[in-house]
Structure formats: C-alpha cells, structure tokens
Length: 311
Image 1 (tube, rainbow, N blue to C red):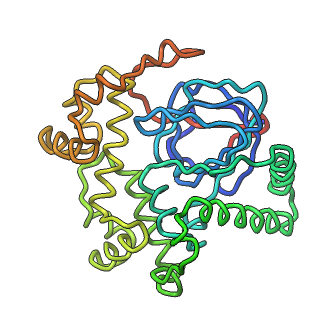
Image 2: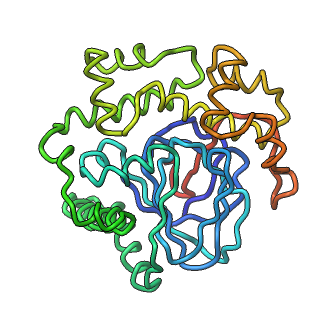
C-alpha cells in the first residue's frame, strides 16, 4: 500500500496505476500531470484542492486533474482506499464530453452522482491493481479497457440530458490524436511554468505548432484561451498560498507568475469575485491545528510513494 512521501519531486509522473493508499495528512501538496480518481469504501477524506476545502465521501467515484495542488488535510478513514492515475494524453484521446473534460481541466472535482456498490467496486479495483502489477501486457490491456468504460460512464453520468443524448460533433473526427496530445502538452507546460514570467504565445511555441494554430486547438479542447487557462492555474496556486501561508499578498503575486500586484489583483477579482485579502480572511486555514500537523510555509509540492517502491 502507498503512503505519502513529501520528498518526491514536483510533477513527477505516476503513469497508469491503480494503487491502494493509506490515508494520511499530507505535509505538502501533491501535483502530477494526470487525471486522478479516488474511491473510498468507508470513511472520508478532506482535500485542500487548489485553495478550496473539498470532502470526498465513500462509495462515490471522484475525479480531478492532479496538476492542481491537492493535499489531504484531514481524514476519517479506518482502512485503505484506491487511487487510479491516468496520463492526460490518454485521457484526452478518449474524446469524452466537452463539459466533463473542461470541468476537470479548469480545476474542479467531478463526483459520480450515485453511490456505487462498495463490495463490487472494491473487487474490481483490486483486480486492476493486480493487473497493473502483472508482467503480462494482456492484463494491462484488460484493466485499461475496463477503466476506460468506468471513466466514460462517469462522464455521461455527470452531463445534463442534452449532453448525454446528443452528439459531440466538435470532437468527432475533427481533432486528430496527435493534436490532442499537443493540447495536453500545453496544459502540462502551464503546470510546469506557471510561476515564470511567460506568456501564452511563448508556451505554444514549445510544442512545435504555429502559435495561432496551437491557441485555436487549445480552445477547442479545453474551452478557453491559453492565457485564460494560465491565469486560472496561477490563481489556483495563489488561493492555496493565501489560505495556508502568512506570505504577503505582493509575495504571493510574484510567486505565482504575475508581473505586477495590480495585474494579480485584477485577475483574482475577475476569477474569484473578491480581492485576495478578503479571500484570505474568509478561507484561511490553520494547518497546524490539523491531525499530524502541517507547516504554514509555502513549500514545493510533495509526492506519494509505495512502501514497496518509489512511484
């Protein structure tokens, strides 16, 4: 079973995995450029996700883009739980409903609306864990096909009736898989370089596409401009720093890649609906009061590791 390791490098990938975890308070946030799914058979977990507190309940599959900083700050779980990680490029290649993909990529968690039969789900997840640990490629393939079906059901269950029953003409046969991978690379660059003074055009040049073409492609896949996506990601990082550290607002602005305090304030107000100072007063968290304790310093993201091997 896997436990949290705060020494792991930021954004180190997990790849395809299905692993049992022991719930524990994480002393640092985790980030990796994959879609993560959590399933608890009992108890609950509370995440600090971006700058928001989110509680995950048992028997309901939950998905999120794990490049958004996520940190377990409390739990009431008497046993283990399952974590599945899926590379972003593979996830995008499934061509799921736009609203589902965009909800995840814009930093929101998605939870299945109905409770799953715990004993059935646990048996299936245990089988996938064995399949990923197997040396037989056929076992890996079988697990991926079943996980794909599960993700597709999750995407459909979270759509309004018109989206479920209608077609998805924008994705169907329009964007080749290679182009989807390019869009995923841009999203990863945003996660990697958000703190640097880069702009959207510079980011798109890194994926060997003409910037105009790259920006159009990104908007088609993620439903926003690259610059808008970058601003949202920076604000998510700023929210986390505001509620978990005592850093000055001007320092938070600099740490999250904004060129000036006024630019940061405008972006924060536009995205969050309130100034940074008001956000901090409303949502500030004393992590030192949580089980096992946590530092209020703004540190680099931590990692998770398995007792059997470093993942």
